[in-house]
Image (cartoon, rainbow, N blue to C red; front, top):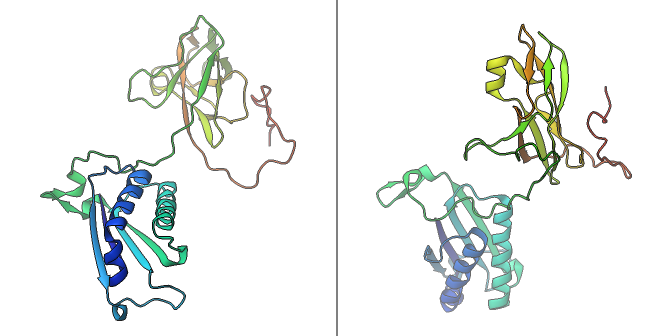
Length: 275
Protein backbone atom coordinates (compact mmCIF):
# COMPACT_ATOMS: atom_id res chain seq x y z
CA UNK A 1 0.00 0.00 0.00
CA UNK A 2 1.32 3.41 -0.99
CA UNK A 3 -0.78 6.57 -0.89
CA UNK A 4 0.73 9.19 -3.19
CA UNK A 5 0.19 12.94 -3.16
CA UNK A 6 1.68 15.15 -5.86
CA UNK A 7 1.90 18.92 -5.39
CA UNK A 8 2.73 21.45 -8.07
CA UNK A 9 1.67 24.64 -9.77
CA UNK A 10 -1.78 24.23 -11.24
CA UNK A 11 -0.98 24.94 -14.90
CA UNK A 12 2.04 22.63 -14.91
CA UNK A 13 0.59 19.76 -12.86
CA UNK A 14 -2.67 19.55 -14.79
CA UNK A 15 -0.81 19.35 -18.10
CA UNK A 16 1.43 16.55 -16.86
CA UNK A 17 -0.94 14.68 -14.57
CA UNK A 18 -1.40 11.59 -16.75
CA UNK A 19 2.32 11.29 -17.40
CA UNK A 20 3.15 11.72 -13.72
CA UNK A 21 0.62 9.04 -12.84
CA UNK A 22 2.21 6.48 -15.14
CA UNK A 23 5.72 7.49 -14.13
CA UNK A 24 5.08 7.16 -10.39
CA UNK A 25 3.26 3.85 -10.73
CA UNK A 26 6.10 2.40 -12.82
CA UNK A 27 8.74 3.57 -10.33
CA UNK A 28 6.88 2.02 -7.37
CA UNK A 29 6.51 -1.24 -9.24
CA UNK A 30 10.19 -1.30 -10.15
CA UNK A 31 11.60 -0.35 -6.74
CA UNK A 32 9.04 -1.87 -4.35
CA UNK A 33 7.53 -4.63 -6.52
CA UNK A 34 4.08 -3.20 -5.88
CA UNK A 35 1.37 -4.66 -8.14
CA UNK A 36 0.67 -2.39 -11.10
CA UNK A 37 -3.00 -2.26 -10.09
CA UNK A 38 -2.16 -0.71 -6.68
CA UNK A 39 -2.46 2.91 -7.74
CA UNK A 40 -3.62 5.36 -5.05
CA UNK A 41 -2.73 8.86 -6.23
CA UNK A 42 -3.90 12.37 -5.40
CA UNK A 43 -2.89 15.39 -7.49
CA UNK A 44 -3.06 18.75 -5.80
CA UNK A 45 -2.63 21.60 -8.34
CA UNK A 46 -2.03 24.84 -6.48
CA UNK A 47 -2.04 28.50 -7.42
CA UNK A 48 1.34 30.20 -7.30
CA UNK A 49 0.30 32.09 -4.16
CA UNK A 50 -0.46 28.81 -2.43
CA UNK A 51 2.70 26.98 -3.50
CA UNK A 52 5.69 28.87 -2.18
CA UNK A 53 9.24 27.71 -2.83
CA UNK A 54 12.79 29.12 -2.80
CA UNK A 55 13.71 31.30 -5.75
CA UNK A 56 16.02 28.72 -7.32
CA UNK A 57 13.03 26.45 -8.11
CA UNK A 58 11.33 26.88 -11.45
CA UNK A 59 7.65 26.85 -12.35
CA UNK A 60 7.98 23.07 -12.82
CA UNK A 61 8.84 22.48 -9.16
CA UNK A 62 7.02 19.35 -7.94
CA UNK A 63 6.71 17.62 -4.58
CA UNK A 64 5.86 13.92 -4.30
CA UNK A 65 4.76 12.65 -0.90
CA UNK A 66 4.31 8.90 -0.42
CA UNK A 67 2.76 7.36 2.70
CA UNK A 68 3.24 3.61 2.97
CA UNK A 69 3.50 0.59 5.25
CA UNK A 70 6.79 0.44 7.13
CA UNK A 71 9.29 -2.30 6.34
CA UNK A 72 11.07 -1.34 3.12
CA UNK A 73 14.85 -1.59 3.31
CA UNK A 74 16.94 1.55 2.84
CA UNK A 75 18.34 0.34 -0.49
CA UNK A 76 14.83 -0.12 -1.87
CA UNK A 77 13.93 3.44 -0.87
CA UNK A 78 17.05 4.78 -2.54
CA UNK A 79 16.16 2.76 -5.63
CA UNK A 80 12.75 4.47 -5.69
CA UNK A 81 14.36 7.92 -5.52
CA UNK A 82 16.67 7.04 -8.40
CA UNK A 83 13.78 5.69 -10.46
CA UNK A 84 11.67 8.81 -9.93
CA UNK A 85 14.48 11.24 -10.73
CA UNK A 86 15.53 9.31 -13.83
CA UNK A 87 11.99 8.91 -15.15
CA UNK A 88 11.11 12.58 -14.49
CA UNK A 89 14.25 13.71 -16.29
CA UNK A 90 13.43 11.49 -19.28
CA UNK A 91 9.75 12.47 -19.44
CA UNK A 92 9.92 16.20 -18.71
CA UNK A 93 13.62 17.13 -18.80
CA UNK A 94 13.01 18.00 -15.15
CA UNK A 95 16.05 19.23 -13.25
CA UNK A 96 16.79 17.43 -9.95
CA UNK A 97 16.35 20.68 -8.01
CA UNK A 98 12.73 20.83 -9.22
CA UNK A 99 11.70 17.49 -7.69
CA UNK A 100 11.51 16.65 -4.02
CA UNK A 101 10.34 13.30 -2.68
CA UNK A 102 9.23 12.42 0.85
CA UNK A 103 8.54 8.89 2.09
CA UNK A 104 6.51 8.53 5.28
CA UNK A 105 6.37 5.04 6.77
CA UNK A 106 3.83 4.03 9.41
CA UNK A 107 3.05 0.69 11.08
CA UNK A 108 0.39 -1.37 9.39
CA UNK A 109 -1.79 -1.23 12.49
CA UNK A 110 -2.09 2.54 11.96
CA UNK A 111 -4.06 1.93 8.76
CA UNK A 112 -7.72 0.97 8.33
CA UNK A 113 -8.40 -0.73 4.98
CA UNK A 114 -11.40 -2.66 3.69
CA UNK A 115 -12.98 -2.81 7.15
CA UNK A 116 -10.00 -4.18 9.08
CA UNK A 117 -6.78 -2.86 10.65
CA UNK A 118 -3.89 -2.91 8.20
CA UNK A 119 -1.97 -5.57 10.13
CA UNK A 120 -4.91 -7.97 9.67
CA UNK A 121 -5.10 -7.39 5.94
CA UNK A 122 -4.15 -10.21 3.57
CA UNK A 123 -1.68 -8.68 1.11
CA UNK A 124 -0.92 -10.05 -2.34
CA UNK A 125 2.56 -8.52 -2.28
CA UNK A 126 5.50 -8.35 0.12
CA UNK A 127 6.23 -5.20 2.09
CA UNK A 128 9.89 -6.20 2.38
CA UNK A 129 10.27 -6.67 -1.37
CA UNK A 130 13.42 -4.98 -2.51
CA UNK A 131 15.63 -6.54 0.14
CA UNK A 132 18.84 -7.61 -1.52
CA UNK A 133 18.92 -11.32 -2.22
CA UNK A 134 21.20 -13.24 0.11
CA UNK A 135 24.29 -14.51 -1.67
CA UNK A 136 24.65 -18.28 -1.97
CA UNK A 137 26.56 -20.17 0.73
CA UNK A 138 28.65 -22.92 -0.83
CA UNK A 139 29.14 -26.13 1.14
CA UNK A 140 31.50 -28.95 0.21
CA UNK A 141 31.42 -32.45 1.72
CA UNK A 142 34.88 -33.86 2.46
CA UNK A 143 33.67 -37.28 3.57
CA UNK A 144 31.38 -39.26 1.28
CA UNK A 145 30.42 -41.46 4.21
CA UNK A 146 28.55 -38.61 5.89
CA UNK A 147 25.19 -37.14 4.82
CA UNK A 148 25.19 -33.66 3.35
CA UNK A 149 24.31 -31.02 6.01
CA UNK A 150 20.58 -30.43 6.15
CA UNK A 151 17.79 -29.04 8.29
CA UNK A 152 15.69 -31.45 10.28
CA UNK A 153 12.58 -29.37 9.61
CA UNK A 154 11.84 -26.99 6.75
CA UNK A 155 11.41 -24.04 9.14
CA UNK A 156 14.73 -24.64 10.94
CA UNK A 157 17.42 -21.96 10.57
CA UNK A 158 20.47 -24.05 11.39
CA UNK A 159 22.08 -26.82 9.33
CA UNK A 160 23.01 -29.93 11.30
CA UNK A 161 26.74 -30.59 11.66
CA UNK A 162 27.86 -34.18 12.29
CA UNK A 163 30.91 -35.76 13.86
CA UNK A 164 33.38 -37.06 11.29
CA UNK A 165 34.91 -39.41 13.85
CA UNK A 166 33.91 -41.08 17.11
CA UNK A 167 35.01 -39.14 20.20
CA UNK A 168 34.66 -39.58 23.95
CA UNK A 169 34.28 -36.57 26.22
CA UNK A 170 35.70 -36.85 29.73
CA UNK A 171 33.37 -36.47 32.72
CA UNK A 172 32.81 -32.94 33.95
CA UNK A 173 35.03 -31.07 31.54
CA UNK A 174 37.78 -31.26 28.98
CA UNK A 175 37.49 -29.93 25.46
CA UNK A 176 37.63 -32.06 22.30
CA UNK A 177 37.98 -30.72 18.78
CA UNK A 178 35.66 -32.65 16.45
CA UNK A 179 35.92 -32.40 12.63
CA UNK A 180 32.64 -32.25 10.72
CA UNK A 181 33.73 -33.29 7.23
CA UNK A 182 32.58 -30.11 5.50
CA UNK A 183 33.96 -26.80 4.27
CA UNK A 184 31.87 -23.69 3.84
CA UNK A 185 32.46 -20.49 1.85
CA UNK A 186 30.95 -17.65 3.88
CA UNK A 187 30.13 -14.61 1.66
CA UNK A 188 31.59 -11.21 2.44
CA UNK A 189 29.38 -9.31 4.85
CA UNK A 190 28.18 -12.52 6.51
CA UNK A 191 29.39 -14.74 9.33
CA UNK A 192 28.98 -18.43 10.07
CA UNK A 193 27.97 -19.33 13.62
CA UNK A 194 28.59 -22.81 15.01
CA UNK A 195 25.89 -23.15 17.67
CA UNK A 196 25.09 -25.82 20.26
CA UNK A 197 22.25 -28.28 19.81
CA UNK A 198 19.77 -27.85 22.64
CA UNK A 199 18.78 -31.52 22.62
CA UNK A 200 22.36 -32.71 23.00
CA UNK A 201 22.99 -30.24 25.81
CA UNK A 202 19.83 -31.22 27.69
CA UNK A 203 20.26 -34.95 27.17
CA UNK A 204 24.01 -35.41 27.61
CA UNK A 205 25.36 -32.15 29.02
CA UNK A 206 27.40 -31.56 25.84
CA UNK A 207 27.77 -28.10 24.31
CA UNK A 208 30.03 -25.97 22.15
CA UNK A 209 32.82 -24.57 24.33
CA UNK A 210 33.25 -21.32 22.38
CA UNK A 211 29.65 -21.24 21.29
CA UNK A 212 28.84 -19.77 19.02
CA UNK A 213 32.06 -20.45 17.17
CA UNK A 214 32.71 -17.93 14.41
CA UNK A 215 33.55 -18.79 10.80
CA UNK A 216 34.89 -15.76 8.95
CA UNK A 217 34.49 -15.24 5.18
CA UNK A 218 38.22 -15.87 4.70
CA UNK A 219 38.30 -19.29 6.37
CA UNK A 220 38.46 -22.14 3.87
CA UNK A 221 39.44 -25.09 6.06
CA UNK A 222 37.32 -27.89 7.45
CA UNK A 223 34.66 -26.78 9.92
CA UNK A 224 35.51 -28.14 13.36
CA UNK A 225 33.58 -27.96 16.62
CA UNK A 226 35.10 -27.66 20.10
CA UNK A 227 32.87 -29.67 22.40
CA UNK A 228 32.90 -30.06 26.17
CA UNK A 229 30.77 -32.01 28.62
CA UNK A 230 29.45 -31.33 32.11
CA UNK A 231 28.03 -34.85 32.42
CA UNK A 232 29.31 -36.80 35.45
CA UNK A 233 30.14 -39.77 33.23
CA UNK A 234 32.06 -40.10 29.95
CA UNK A 235 29.97 -39.25 26.88
CA UNK A 236 30.72 -40.97 23.57
CA UNK A 237 29.61 -39.38 20.31
CA UNK A 238 29.63 -41.71 17.34
CA UNK A 239 30.66 -40.85 13.82
CA UNK A 240 27.66 -39.33 12.07
CA UNK A 241 26.01 -38.04 15.26
CA UNK A 242 24.64 -34.52 15.08
CA UNK A 243 26.84 -32.39 17.34
CA UNK A 244 26.12 -28.75 16.44
CA UNK A 245 24.34 -26.53 13.95
CA UNK A 246 25.54 -23.95 11.46
CA UNK A 247 23.77 -20.61 11.09
CA UNK A 248 24.83 -18.03 8.48
CA UNK A 249 23.74 -14.45 9.10
CA UNK A 250 24.61 -10.89 7.99
CA UNK A 251 27.34 -9.22 10.05
CA UNK A 252 28.40 -5.62 10.54
CA UNK A 253 32.10 -4.85 10.20
CA UNK A 254 33.52 -3.02 13.21
CA UNK A 255 36.42 -0.61 12.88
CA UNK A 256 38.83 -0.23 10.02
CA UNK A 257 39.50 -2.73 7.27
CA UNK A 258 42.34 -5.21 7.65
CA UNK A 259 45.83 -3.96 6.87
CA UNK A 260 47.14 -4.46 3.36
CA UNK A 261 48.53 -7.95 2.97
CA UNK A 262 46.51 -9.41 5.85
CA UNK A 263 45.15 -12.73 4.61
CA UNK A 264 43.62 -15.85 6.03
CA UNK A 265 43.35 -19.26 4.49
CA UNK A 266 42.89 -22.87 5.47
CA UNK A 267 45.20 -22.55 8.48
CA UNK A 268 42.50 -20.48 10.15
CA UNK A 269 41.10 -22.70 12.90
CA UNK A 270 42.52 -21.14 16.07
CA UNK A 271 45.17 -19.28 14.06
CA UNK A 272 44.01 -15.76 14.99
CA UNK A 273 46.06 -16.12 18.16
CA UNK A 274 45.36 -15.71 21.84
CA UNK A 275 45.00 -12.62 23.95
